[in-house]
Length: 104
Image (cartoon, one colour):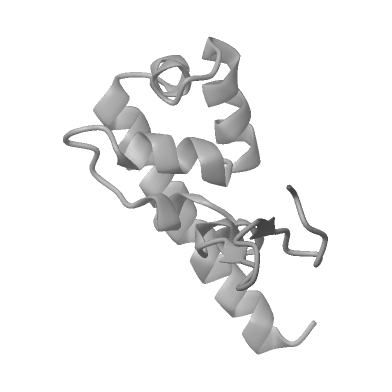
């Protein structure tokens, strides 16, 4: 890994940490943040240890009124692919998975 990519990763990690702290401050505690995302009270603590939130939970939190950060700021770069819209087959209109398999 090059020095530049390490610096970029460190920069993104700081952004995620700052966004997570803002979200926890908004909710009042990490356990309350986990509850508001539709998970358990332990989920918030796990997110703090990991330093990011799963994309599904970040989307749920971003829909809450007054939430201070965007869902995109809370997730890992790999999970940001989840924010793309699902592709559909032009012939039968079924959803196509990311790996190319059909789901329905």
